[in-house]
Image (cartoon, rainbow, N blue to C red; front, side, top):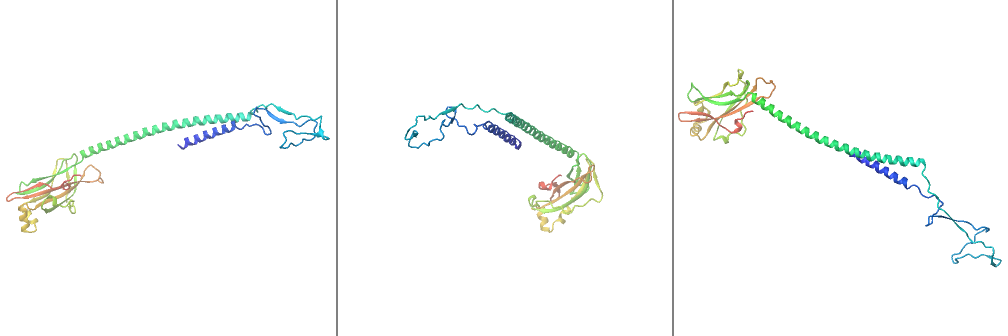
Length: 304
């Protein structure tokens, strides 16, 4: 926009110069023009050596010769000259005027071209911004699609509870690879908490220090491994007193067993971020039979 302002200022300056040139020619000094357009010049009287001053009180001038009027007194003659012809422009003035006109035209054309160029640039900029926004949206969609493909191909460890076939009232927490690529278990952690119900558990699970398995565990798609085992006989040892164990028997309090499994995609780079599966189970203590089911708040059953 500063370019357009400069061009408009230049055009105004050129028009001001033209106006000044057109009004520069005035009549020459020493000439006066009467209302009829002719120049008047007063000539002195012939034969008289001096002019008699005229007073303000007498409209006419009287001249006396030896106390009487002079017979050879000459009247005053006023000669009216025709108005002089207007002066013609010199070649220098004509060239200057023509140059000013040409510069004014060039300035006007330059302003129009500049405005047209700015409009084209504005349209091109708008089109480029629209294309860039569309490209960004396409790239984001492609990234989400690629991430969805990666997530569908990665391993996913899911937690289930299975009863023991050899020990009565005994249960095993199993981790199964439901993904499409092998998974390597990096570490596991578990904890037992006694609370009235799920709402009385800590808002954020506290697993403690995770421990790495003694032997590397690699799960192919569809394979499972035991994470935690629990039986009826362990319930009494968890309770701090006999009274609390009775409250567990009456379901006034519940035993929650929860933990997490940290694993990595076997075909991914080793420095890639690991994944985590959190799990939580509720131990149900009956008179003769016991059970272990998946329970707990959503934060205790997450998959990343």
